[in-house]
Length: 601
Image (tube, rainbow, N blue to C red; front, side, top):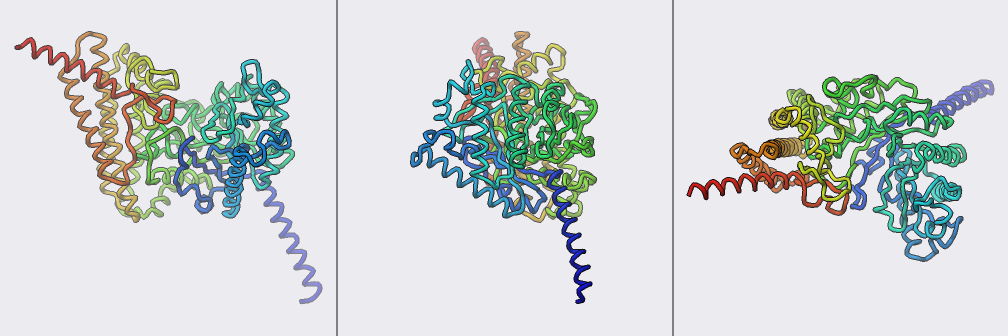
C-alpha cells in the first residue's frame, strides 16, 4: 500500500470514527428508553422471574433495568463522611450494609455484562435510624418528620449522593419515588414522605437531584411523579413544579399512563406531554388489581390504542393512548413493569400473561411506527401459535380486556374512581359500610357503589353486567381449549388460567347478586329468599370448583380470598369482605326458613 493510499484510508477511518463517536454521544444525550422492572413484594422473598436476568432483557430490546428489591442502593452506604458512628465498622448493622453493597455491585456488573444500563429504585426519604437519632433536632420538623425544609436535611442528602456514587461509580442512575416509603427490607433505616410543603418540596428535591446527580456526575435521574397531593394527576400542579426546574437531558419524569393507579376506567394521564422535560411512561404488565397474571388479561391493545371505556362511560378528551403521544418531543420511552406491584398474591408460577403484555409493549416501543397487532402477531410467531389458533388466541386476548372491565368495574354504568378498590391483590371486598380498621381497607367502596346504584334504580343492572362478564369468560374458556402452541406448559396454563378466570368471575357475579338482593332487603325489610338461596348455592358450588382447580393443577395460581384488603401484614386482611357479607344474608335466609318451618309445625 502506498503512503498516499494509507493516508486516505487513515482519513476515512478517522472521519468514520468521529461520526460513530458523535452518533453515540447524540444517542447518549437524547436516548429512547425501554426499561423493565420486577417490582418485588415488600418484605417477601424476591420474585422468581426470567425478567430478573439482564440477558433476557437485552435479548428483548430493553435498554435498562430498574432494580427494585426495596433494599435501596442508598441504604447500602455507611455515611462515614458524615459520622463514622452511624454504622460503626464491625457492627452487625455495618455488616448488613456491606452485604447489601455487595448485592448492588453484583447487580450492576450483571446488567453491564449484558449490555444494558441499571437504575436503582429509590424511596426518599430513607435514612439510617442512627443518623436520625443523632441529628433529629437539625433534620426534623415540629411534627417529627424528616424535612427538606431544614437546611441540614439537604446537606445530609448531598453527602448521601456523593458517597452513593463513590461507592457505586458504575451505577447509571436512580429512579426516585416520593409519597410512599417502604421500610420492609431495610431494618436499620427509617424514613417518611419528603413532600411536606406541596410543590415547593418537589422543587427543592428536584434541584438537589439535578445538581448533584445529573450536572455534577453525569448520571440519570428518573423522577417519578407518583406521589400524593397532585403531582401525578393535576396538570397545574405538575406544571408548577416542572416549570420551576431547568431542563436537563438526564433528568426525566416518569409518569403512569393512568390518572391514578393502574385501574381500568381511570383516565389517560393528562400530565403526559406537558412542560418541556423528557418523559417516560410507566405501564404495568402484571396488573395488580386484575389478577396478577392468574387469568388472561391482555391490556396492551388498550394502552397503545385506547381502552374501550374511553369511548363509553369514561369518554376521554385529548390524549387517550400511547399512539396519541408517541410523536410528541417529550415522549422518550416506556418503563415496563414486567412483574409485580401491590401486595401478596395471587402468586403465579407461569409468567405467560405477563410475558405477552411485556413483549408487545417493549417491542412496540422499539419502533412505534408498528401497530399493536403487528407486534402481537410476532409474539404468536415466537410462541408457535399457528393456523386457526392465531385467530382464536387473538380473540381470546381481546375478550379478556372486555371481561375484566365488566367483572371488576363497568363498561356502561358510571363507576367512580373510589369504587375500584373493592377488589385488589388477592382479595374480594364486601358491602359493609364500615371498615374494621382505617388502614386503606377495601371494605366500604362497594357499599357506596351499591347505595348509588340503588338510589338510581340501577343496582340490578350493575349485577347483570357481572353475569355478562361470565358469558365472556365462558367464551374465553372455550377458545382456550382450541388454541395450540409450541410450549406445552404454556398451552396447559392457557386453559387452566382461563378456567380460573371463569370460576373467579362466576363467584363474583353470584357474590354481587347475593349482596344486591340482600342490600335491597335491608332497605325494604323484605328479602327474596328463593333468589338469595339459589345464588348462595351457586356461589358455594363455584368456590368448590375453584378450589378443586387449584388442587388438581400444579400450574394454577394461588386463589383469591373473600376478605377485604387492609394494610396490615403479613395476611393483609381481617374478617370482613365478600365472605362476611354473603354469610350475613345466608344467616338471614336460614333464620327465616327456620322460623317458617317452626310456624308450620
